[in-house]
Amino acid sequence: MPTPPPHANESHPALADLDQELNRLQRAIRLAIQNQLAKLTGQSLGSLRENQDLADSIHRLLDSHGLRIQCIECGHPAILRVSPRSGTASGAFVFDHSIDGRRTFHGGKGTVPEIRLVAKPPRKKADPPRKATAG
Ligand SMILES: [Zn+2]
Image (cartoon, rainbow, N blue to C red; front, side):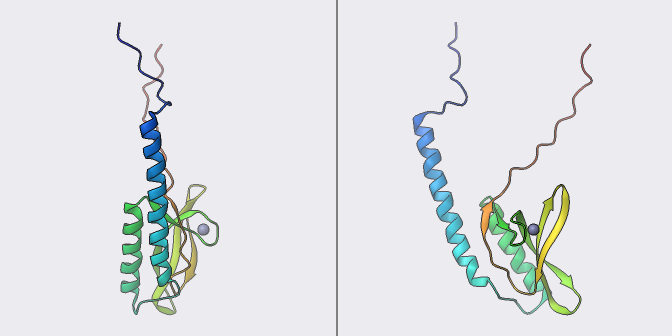
């Protein structure tokens, strides 16, 4: 008789230690990135294109570490983007996020807003289509 597998929710002590260590490192990374990005707050580059590239670079950096920017208006995890806006040559920094399933933009200043980092929310699972219930 094969031995039954251990309960899935009981992780090995070595793994629990590792988990704790990784959490600590992740927090250190998040703070390090946040400290660097804080230097950009209040800045604007010369053109819409440059600001969009900046927002894009920030997003790629954050995404590779499983992070998002926290919206200063509502607190939801968001992606920083730069939208063209009439009246400004260099666009507006907006927080792009979904609230109640609807894509929503907040912010809209002409300079990089205050940046606070939060963990990226887990992707919503799309339920795989199931076959009709068996007889
Ligand atoms: Zn918001």
